[in-house]
Length: 225
Image (tube, rainbow, N blue to C red; front, side, top):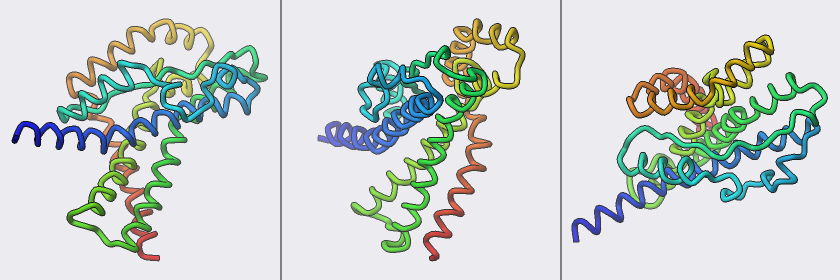
């Protein structure tokens, strides 16, 4: 009976984190495709990727297996979705347009975190800070939603390919330098994975904590209205 209870408790804890994580990932990829369409490339739309349907963006390993294992064991959150396809030939100014297409992903997560902070502030205003029961579970999910979006935004702004930060940095690099960095992205991907497994990626909690403090002030301000 105790083992069954522990299993149910673990599954519930995973779902509290996984659902916000999945939505944050999908919105992130949707933002890439949406800005790409604004800039003239409809590849994502044509391929059915301009959607919030998680299955359109899901990578079995990065979207489900690794994140769920991490959430169940308490290890570092690590995951990814399939990159939204962009055909630079359809862009009027590929270098500048790719900057905004890449930047849209992290910005979308900060936008979601802001919405989450406002919603949490309103929740506290009307219900207070619950210590138990269903309201506490709702409160916990809202806070998890904010944290996940901030962490995804900070992580994706690391200036390495294949992350968005690498594409944002490319706007300011000579083409030959960026081409070389893109050619090395299979190695930088392995490096990122090693850093996560080793726990070294905890360094992103520094800038993430600063941003989370800002959203905490936002939530407090809304709660005092």
